[in-house]
Length: 113
Length: 114
Image (cartoon, rainbow over all chains, first blue to last red):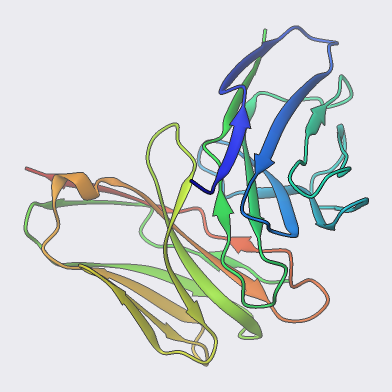
């Protein structure tokens, strides 16, 4: 079945540690996205990528980094520079056409201890 | 800058009732509008996608309408069921160089009581 797989589902981190969230899609989509969701707030864009080896900062990129070495994969690293990393992280993808539908993974919940 | 608003933030209805969820946006220059459902602790599931040239889309008991000129979309749910309880979010895809930056509302949390 085609879809977006995020792992791990739950992750605990000590302060000062970097962690990497995985996102893999087999939908053959060009565009991929990372969003952060906090209680009572809408989704906020962290980074997005339209093609391999290219990515753009979103609205809240500080303290995060990404790579896009393969079309299927778009990992997100939450660095120790991110001041408030506890959140629900969602990966999404779309065909890079102007009218393309957005599809989401099941999310990863990161908790900083 | 595009802003997307969903009112009310929460809604509780008895089972069987027909209901309407609202989504408004400030900039009518959009490519499409998408409605999603989110269950607690889960990702977003796409329900309906309306292109800017369309007025409505239907899927089963769901019907979504789009009025670009007034900056409004509604999601109509017929004969609601307890299984429809979830948070419903809308998102718009803007025209222009930012076409890959979707704008989301904060959602309406729906509770359908048995």
